[in-house]
Image (cartoon, rainbow, N blue to C red):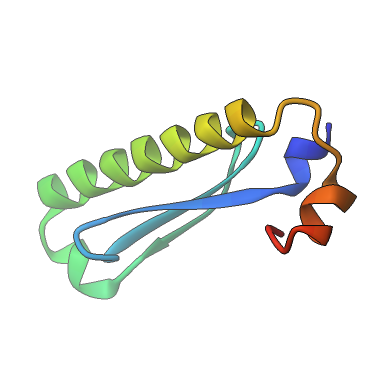
Length: 79
């Protein structure tokens, strides 16, 4: 449950598309720079890449901190 309070950000295209995901790998936010909307195919690729990047980071977070309490993460300065 505590992983749900932690977030990671994946990005693609040098930050043109960003996806924020919680530790349960649920997307919380998507940001798309206006210039990305000009090329739909590129945008689709960037969104997919940002989601995959965020998911990989969320999986790493879950593997590093299985059952770790959020207050301990806060004490370590990680949240």
